[in-house]
Image (cartoon, rainbow, N blue to C red):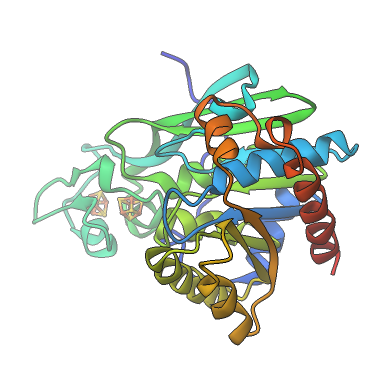
Length: 317
Ligand code: SF4
Ligand code: SF4
């Protein structure tokens, strides 16, 4: 088994991942080394979010931009299916866990009272540690009066890095059965150092993994589909992005003249619709073959060039 070489989470890192903190976002973006980070997100799965992210990344690279495509959907990564990167490096991703030295432990129970996740339990006994519940905050070690708690580490997945078509690729893969995806998402973002433009393919939905991804971005592109379900989930995603205090815009994917609801809903609320990508069977067929829509279908490439130009202006604003 590979040894963990990636940096462990720092003490004091936010274990909840839910606090709207623009300054923290900027700091982390700077840590990533990316001049600007664009999160491509959606309120639900199946909207074409990954298709948009991959096509944008390849379009940017072909236009001479230094581009990193980051697969933050660590529970179900699929960017690699479309980008087909050559993976040069694969390394384990770890989180810190407490290790108790029973000889030093006096069974005082302070660690158990400190832990809000019940990951360490002491009922007038030497503590029991439940590593899969631990968020790695380090609080138990800080309060232990005898210094009985040291830091171990636990592997939760891996981080792949490589490249394809001029695009640098960084992707996280969470171990099957592992629930702790936000720490891996943070590490994947940190591993995306050095890219001029970092495009973050977010997990679908509006739960912690999606929020964690968006917090690392300077701008959020929400991909919606013009169906009642799509509109419902877009409303939720918009609410999340607004609470995070991030600038954002919407792309309506598979748009048809018969279903204007998503665009009308955005316009009525002053939300910018950056593009409407038409419903085209050839795009779906290209995706099913793992091909880039921008290459496979006339006009789609130009649509992504136009979208990229708008996004670059928004990212510079
Ligand atoms: S066990 Fe310790 S490090 Fe883990 S979440 Fe609880 S207090 Fe934090
Ligand atoms: S705080 Fe330290 S001494 Fe007290 S029960 Fe926990 S490990 Fe033992």
